[in-house]
Amino acid sequence: MRKDFWKSFAATSTAVALVFTLAACSNNAATNNSNTSSGTKNAEATKNAADAKPTKIKFFRVAVEQDPKKDRTLLELQKRTNTDLEFITAPWDQVSTKVMTMLSSGEECDIMSIDPNGVNYLQLAQDKLVLQLDDLLKTDKYPVEKKLAYAESYFKKLNIDGKVYGIPMPIQPGDWNHIIRIDWLKNVGLEMPKTPEDMYEVLKRFKNNDPDKNGKDDTIGIYVAQPNNQLQSLLNMFMFYSGVNFDLVDGDIVYNFASSKYKKGLKFIQKAYQENLINKDFITIKDKNFVLNQFSAGKSGIANSPMIVNTFNALKKNVPDAQIELLSPLPHDNGTNGANAMDSKWNWMVNVLPKANKNPQKSLEFLEYLNSEEGRKLVCVGIEGIHYKSYKDGVFYGRSQAEQDKDWDPAKAEGPTGSPMWWGMTSTINGIIPFDKYPKVEDALKNVTTFVTEEDLKTNPYYDMRKKGSLLTYHDPVPAIITEYDEIKGNMTSIKMEYEAKMITASDADFEKLWNEYLKKLEAAGLPKAVDAAKKWYNKNK
Image (cartoon, rainbow, N blue to C red; front, side, top):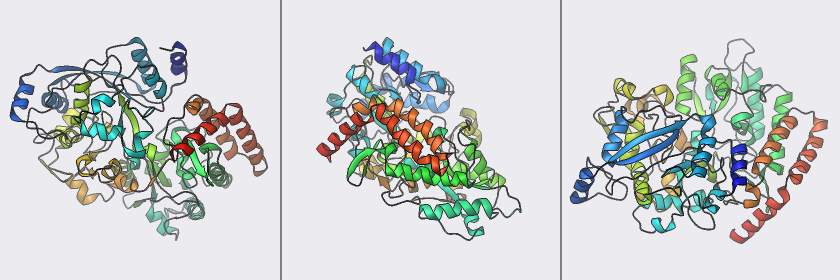
């Protein structure tokens, strides 16, 4: 192992990484007639699974509060998979250190769920700290894991030299989606914005034309914050802000954050800043919930929310007559398509099998079960007959709030169809992905059966906004890990954050000067070499 890499990793890794330590499941993941996506097990195999000794699973996961010895959903999961779960956990701000320590020390670990943007995923594979999975996946025993590992442009960027070192965990891009107060639009005499010019007029009237009709000057179009990528709500009109390192502009591959698109987006925000159409304190906001709290309080008309249903319900408590709609496609400039979804945004984390894994086959079998329809229903909503009465076509009937309250705190989940166990593990999609019905993963992901309760189906028209926001995708022209960029990406981000704030708050006279200074900083940090490598990849693979 390269000590210099781990020193650098420990110093610079800031993104969330989760570690899943899964030993093995039995050869049959069901004791209660449960089916995996691989097909129904025969009676003899089921009996063998029931008779086998449970497999111990050590499971590291960030911020876990559920107790597998008490939580009935987890007890049921262990029963169905014939496993014995033990969670190891750490706070969000300590996960990177924990991951580094476990990998570098060779601590016993079977599956780790890592954020490839938060750790040097390429280096892990090159240092052989994680297993190559191609031979295991060739057996066709794990059809869902195989599909994800080799899926189209969405996940192929995670393959290294054409080989698989991890199983992507799907996430629905609509989980962070832009919503707008359509009752405010009506009050100020505007229609849904379709262009940046339309959006400018919306921001202007939401600030100056008393959209909530309370006679006070107490509203703003949108609250933004530089932390947590909240500026993307406006930058996404001009570019694909999140997850795209290199873009195609006028037929040429360029660094996304040195492109003419990015510059145009910054100029738009600078103008809004000068005219007080966005909050002046966007640089200093540290509370990740501040922006959404302002929207829920009825103080702003546009928000970028990770849980739209929850945001809508919070808004309704303060403004009972409020109405929202999805901004999809986003208002967009020439050269963009208004998509909320990009290739990389269909994936957050990757499940890797560390070299210490003793049962790789059974680890993959466990993941296969969790991706099955039965597995998703269990970890999202609980046990049929206890947490709800029945289920059909995405709808849960007879949900029992009292029984759910015994096992989890709804405030820390995703409402009635999301226990705290629903996200992570194998998917952060609150529903069922029909992998078996569609040859292409892209089509399966866009035809998710979204989970909803009987009550929400009747009263909440926004429950499936995530799905609606993910139907239009922008495809990354360079869906690959570019080593030359990977080596400097931390420095690139730091420079961008510094100059982004400076340019937005600058005068018109200073903006161009700062932009040129910014480009020189990027160049000095090694960007030209990375761009050349990206161009070579594109020309070879386009």
